[in-house]
Amino acid sequence: RFYDEDPADPGYALASDPGSASATKIIPAGTTTLKVMVGALRDRINNGASFSQSVDVSLDSIDPNYACCRFLETFGVDVIDVDESLISAGKFLSKIPPVTSGNVPLKRDENAATYVYTLALTSMPFAPVRLAVRGDVDAFESIEFDGVANASLTIQPEDWAATRLLSLHVADDNVLEGNRNYQVTVVATSNDTNYDGVTSATLTSVVLEDDVAFAT
Picture (spheres, one colour):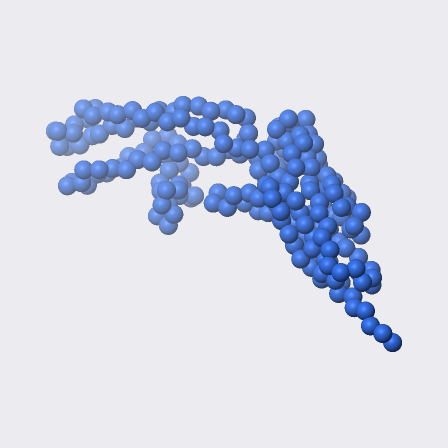
């Protein structure tokens, strides 16, 4: 389909344009060039399907030199599937890449140590995906997915695009232990082989000790 370019965001389609099967543009008199940009809407489906598409451009004018059908050009475009099945630690948009590896740290004082991470799948799965927290899980007083106490969550394919909140709570123990790090990852299991075994970035909860030692 054809879309008008967003004047505020050159190179990207205008979001309010529903698109059409064909498009007509006027080349003003005295102008010799018309820029045609060809792209593909990302479907966020990791099926490995790549395809070729052709775009026909023809000219028509009351100028007899450019009369209808005298000039016709066909451009071939190869569209490659670039979607991946990963777990993102944080929201992502077209211009904000997902965080799928490395370390994602959060720091909190021990007396208010609740660590909230935003999680999202990067593509639509073909089967339910179960996310489970692995690692230093025993260090936390409670673990919640979307406000429900549970160390795991199952995502249905139709709900894949919704972001999920993982909350990790550390109890204030009144024990002088110093600052410490607790690390977990989120691991996927699914009948969708693209997601089965996928592991998120390392989520590091940095606990800042608030207890002090003093003599009486």
